[in-house]
Length: 347
Ligand SMILES: [Zn+2]
Image (cartoon, rainbow, N blue to C red; front, side, top):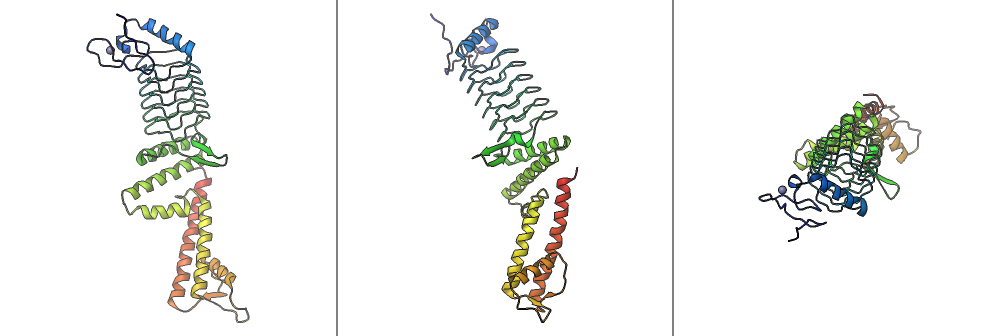
């Protein structure tokens, strides 16, 4: 009787009595029960060499150390818990691959596609990931310490509890994707808010340690945004002051926002003064007040200059309006100084 052998896309159980594990592709046993492992590896390598594809292969736990596996089609491959230490996987397509707990220590993944692959608890220490594509991959609890991420695409990658100690060339650019040539977005996987908040926190710490303060500022802004969304989701009222701070100053990270919101506040108050006719011009010789007089009055009040050539009317409403603008103005000026020094000083 001819022995049944697992082919591509076919899932067979290991033929060892009592074993319920999946058989490896091109074989009839699971990795542990293969009688002649050396011969099996030879057959597998020959197949990969000639066909250049191992798409959908089941290769759980196999040991393929120091192998040349470049430019292969390894889409949807199951390499969970496999050992690929020191191998060369450059320019291979591993999209959607199952790489849970796979050992990729010291592997060369230059230009490799790892899109949407599952790298949970994978060991990627000291691997080279130049120009690799890790977008939408799950790198939760993966160990990437010492790996080189030069121009590695990590847009929407899940980085929960990922070890990033001593990684090289990690910048905000890694998380940036450009849409329609002009629009760009930078983010990690934000589907789980708590996980995303933690990812940004560890990125912030990484950037701070490496003196990349501008990028730390981006990570900090993102972290605070996640925190605010978590509070909002939990219906915690603490989210309201946070949302206001986010709007006015980008949680203290965006001085531009302070300028924009100040201009908006001054404009709104100018209109309110005009609407309620809340100011009088002190100099009798000046012409009737126009909108620019109200804008000028609003600026003078906002900056708490108070020249006194235009003053509030003597009723309570007009005085309250002017007083509230002065109060907000003083707060906004303080906020501007704070965000500016936070952004541009070495923290
Ligand atoms: Zn077995």
